[in-house]
Image (cartoon, rainbow, N blue to C red):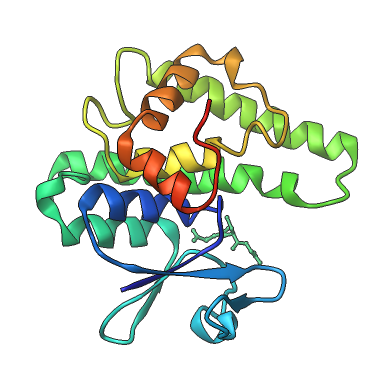
Length: 204
Ligand SMILES: N[C@@H](CCC(=O)N[C@@H](CS)C(=O)NCC(=O)O)C(=O)O
């Protein structure tokens, strides 16, 4: 398998899961501006949507979209327990968190990457994210991770997306449970390894 990634983008989440699951996969860096890979390929021919992550499988198929890539990787290593069993109630809960992260948090950040962003429009996007963060803060009270006491694929995704908050000057310290949660995930050995592999800071 080969994961197409860009340092610090959502492709960090599948890398965390691959490391947590002990999966040996190859990595190819994508320049999102030129849509070319470090190996010299036209990324649009690999994923016509032009997004990272994309996961190329042995079969020649390419899987795109973060939640399903995470699900696929976790299913390759069930003993790592990064995702509850297919068909179980707990699995649907993790799916719920994956979708919340994808549609409310990940896509909530999208307008902030657009430059130049008129201050009023930026404020509206930030307000919306802050409402989601307040909800998350409430949900995380009394839990170690999104779906309970066990780290799952949803946490790798949520951690990756919320790590963009500092860059966009959104203060997570207003959400103390979210801040503790982020630190808990940051402290995981495989998360640090994944950050290091992408050349990202591992000092708090
Ligand atoms: N729906 C896609 C979105 C992925 C996405 O937003 N990727 C961003 C990086 S975090 C990207 O590649 N943006 C480049 C672009 O849109 O051209 C998914 O879930 O995988």
